[in-house]
Length: 335
Image 1 (cartoon, rainbow, N blue to C red):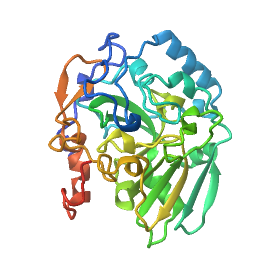
Image 2: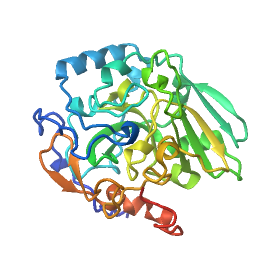
Image 3: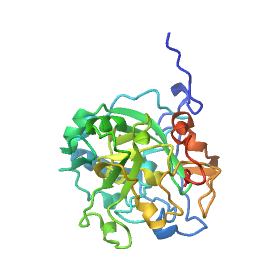
C-alpha cells in the first residue's frame, strides 16, 4: 500500500481559503526606507493603483490573442500545495518586476505591447540535435499541469500563486543534452521597439539566467506557461517563464526564447551587474542577509504583517541534497 507522507510545508486543500474570498483589496507597501536598489534591482516597493476591472480587461484582451487559451485550466497536481492562501490574482498580475519594460512595479500595462506569436524557442548548445520549435508545438509536446507555489523576491516580499506549465525535466528530456553538458543557460527575448527598458544601455541585455542540470531536472523546477487557470499574462513572463520556488525571484527568468546546454556556468543578468549582491545560486535563506537588508522575514502581498522566511523558501525536503557538497560561504549558496 502506498503511504504518502505530508511535507512539512503543506496545508490540506480542504483548509485552504478559495482565491478571491480570503483577501480584500489592501494597500501595498510604500517605498522601502533603505532607498532604491542598485540600478533598480527591484526598485521602490511602489503601490499598485490599478483596479480589478482594468486588470480583467487587459487579461481578456491577452487571452483572446493567445492561441493557447483553450489549453487552460489544466489539472492540478496535488503533490504541490501550499501552507498559505493564494495571493489575490489582481495583486499577483499587477505588482511585477520586468526590467525589459521598466524598473517600477506597475509595468503591466506596458507589457501588453509584447507580441506572443510568432514565438520560437531555440534549444541548442551541447545537445544531440539543436532545434527551433514554435511555442504552440512545444506546448503540444509537454505534460501540462497546475502547481501551487510560493514565490519569494530578494526584496523580501512574497506571494503564493497557481502556475500552469510543465516540469523542466520534460524539456531537458526533449533536448537530449550530451553527457558533457553541466548547465542550462536561458535567454529572454530582445525587442527594443516594444520593450522600452531594453533601450537602457547600462543593462546587459538580453536577460540571462542559468541552472545546473541537477537543478533543472529536480522535480520542483517548472516552466510556467499559465497563471490562475489561464495563459500566462505578458507581465508575468508569457509565454514561458521559469519557476524555481526555492530560489529568489530574480532567478525566475521571463519571456524565454532560448535554452542553451553548456559546460560553462552562465553569468546571469544581475550577477553581471552586481555579483556581490546577486549570485548564481540565490537560494532562499533567512539567516543570510542581503548586503543591505535582512532576509529573516517577508511581506506577503495582501497581508498586513510580516511572516518568517523559511530556508529554501520551505522546499528544503526537495532540494537540500543538491547543495550538500558545496560550501555555503565559499560558494555563496544563498545570495
